[in-house]
Image (tube, rainbow, N blue to C red):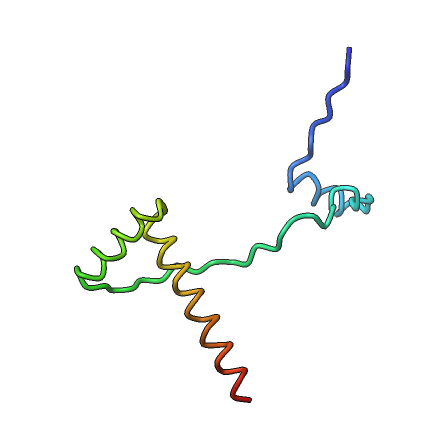
Length: 86
C-alpha cells in the first residue's frame, strides 16, 4: 500500500520551528506575498453605483473588482506622471 503524505498545517510548522526543527522544506519561494488589507467605507452617488454596476456586468466581474481595478490604474497613472516631473 502506498503511503500518503499529509501536509502539516501552519500551526504544526510553527510548532516544529519552536522545537528547533528544520522547516525550510516547507518554503519554496514560489508563492506571492499577500499584504494585509484594510476595510474602508466609501460613499457613492446612486448614479455612480449604476455606472459601476453596468461596467461590472459588461466585464463580468464584481463591483468591488471594478473599483479596485480602476483605482489601481488611476494610482499608477498618477505615480507615473509624478515621476516624470522629477
